[in-house]
Image (tube, rainbow, N blue to C red):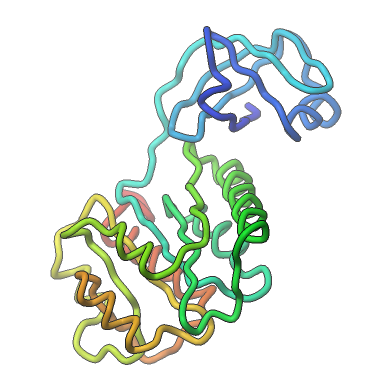
Length: 248
């Protein structure tokens, strides 16, 4: 059955209103009409069976038949704080991270970042990345859509970390703690934040600042991973060891 994400505010009084590009897809591509059924998802785990009442060029109105059991979200909520990379690498990171099970993405401006985003450009990028997350959630049949935050700096991101939060920062100069050992020695946490550097990696000062706030540096082994690879690998390993990736 066809699935469409809408905002929670678009579900009111037993009806769901679909707007935007999905309207053209419903009308012209799928050729759905009055009486056809579809699934409406609110992006926060709510799944609704709905029936089309009427369709116009601008919106499709559906009556809610029933709320279905919520889809199984990831057991561990992973926030991926990603140093903003060049080009369209962030699109790939968000797309594949969504498929793996990442719950939130935070684009990070670092000392060695080659890309600087602010003002209108930052807003446009955030909107684009959120659309990428929505499309990836549709493709992998997630019931929720990961949130993509606005580009932020170190101080902002570290200031949001609650005391005691599980947080890791893979760093090529870490010699004492491996990711494998960390996951084996610590009980699964309901939430974890992962910090991944940009193309030039993190500076020692950035790692020290994160360590002071309880973020644990870990080694990923002898190979140096590209920025667009590292976050996906670490997220997958965390969700495999602590979560549901690979089955329970």
